Amino acid sequence: MFHFVGPMGQHADVPHLPAHPSLTRRSPALPLFTGSAFVLLIALVPFLAGCGAHHDDEAHEGHAQGRYPATTALRTDTVVQKDYVCQVHAIQHIELRALEKGYLQDVLVDEGQRVRKGQLLFRIRPVLYQAEVQRAQAEADLAAIEYRNTKVLADSNVVSPNELAMAKARADKAKAELDAARAHLGFTEITAPFDGIVGRFHVRVGSLLDEGELLTELSDNSSMWVYFNVPESEYLAYAQARSAGRGTEVALRLANGDLFKEVGEITAIESDFDNTTGNIAFRATFPNPAGLLRHGQTGNILMTTPLNDVLVLPQKATFEVLDHRYVFVIDKDDVLHSTRVELGPELQHLFVVTGGLKEGDRFLLEGLRKVKDGMHVEYQFLPPDSVIRHLDLYAE
Image 1 (cartoon, rainbow, N blue to C red):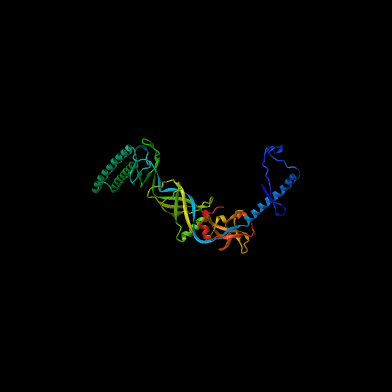
Image 2: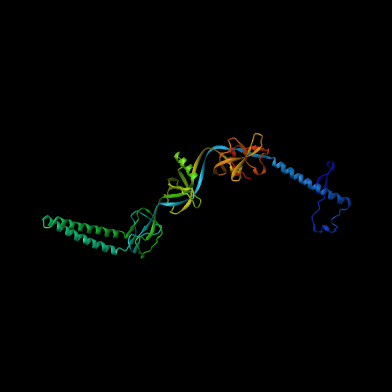
């Protein structure tokens, strides 16, 4: 039924005609309107449409004039946490290379094995170098005998002092050659220079090695160096916090999203900024007692900077126009004014306000798309601390 208000306030009901493909044909089930009844129905159609539109306008107007939630900025102490992509490095990570030519005779460890300082890792076939040591030893013995004999003759004034000096020089030379041969023989055994983990092998037993050929890598993972890049503005904030004796501790989020249980500390900052990116490299040191971290891992550094006595407002209370942020400030007459605000660090659901808004200024929290500048509104004030506590529960 269509319901409308007739003249003198009387109500009337008009039967609703169902849509049907056979309306253009005569049907016994559908009565025909003739004469004045048909004219009356035609006259009522615009009137009914106007009534429906009138009701829609009233509903929309009533919604637009509803009570909007409003609040003020909150002055508080907080912290801002920055997230930086990082690269994990072992505190010592070196390449082990062959110091002499020869065939690789023995591989005494396995890939990924933990080794101790001084432990024998590789041995190059030492036959040639042993022969060199024996030859040098014989020449050193001969030179030593000649020197002793010459010294006896020199003591009896049979030979001159110069002859004795030459004999001594030949003995010293032979001894030096013996020391060199022994050193070359020692180079056929490659030992671990520190405690660490053996990397991947690049050679196998029987390989013919050249001098300097890469054998494997060795990593000391007892502590880890984590490198990350920081923009110039954030570097300045960190430098000010560090000068105040805080802000040097950082956390590490691993690739699976878990936080590394050890706390790191920023121990070095590179000397120069990268002119192409405007960043500077930081290095944080993390203890790694369980050996979870390995050289070459990636993750994210979480660096926390304290903010004292700052104004914060909910992000949802702002809107953006041409890369600038605005809020609808409510004046003493409950009239809205779009006001540009200057923002600092971004927190979860919050902005830090650095300008454009004073403590105590009231602004709309929701319904920003339903109002406009200069509009009079009715609002419900919500305490800012309560608003911030329940930000996760709010939804537009």
